[in-house]
Structure formats: structure tokens, C-alpha cells
Length: 65
Image (cartoon, rainbow, N blue to C red):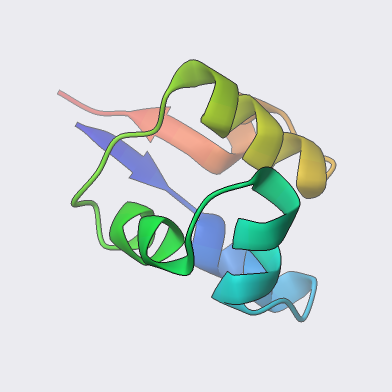
């Protein structure tokens, strides 16, 4: 399972789901589903999200057994 800190980072950057979605080229619902753990991102999407937050992929996403 992949856990993420997207909501935490969005809060830090005072960013709405819509803002992040626009920046990474997905729908707002995709960001919502990622935050709720309903969807695992592709490597490209994870990379792009981390890049928006000026963080490494490992800082935003963690893999748990």
C-alpha cells in the first residue's frame, strides 16, 4: 500500500485540490482519490506531484506492507 502526505503538503503551500490537479494535469477527483488512498499514482504522476512541492517522491509517498 502506498501512503501519501499530499494533503499535508497542499496545506503547507495553501493549495486547493483543484490547484494541484491543474499543475500536474489531472482532474481534482484524482487528487481526492489519491489523498484518500483509493488510487495509487503512476510513477510520472508521483514525480510531478513531488516536483510541485519541491520534495522528493519519498517525502510525499511511502510504501507500506
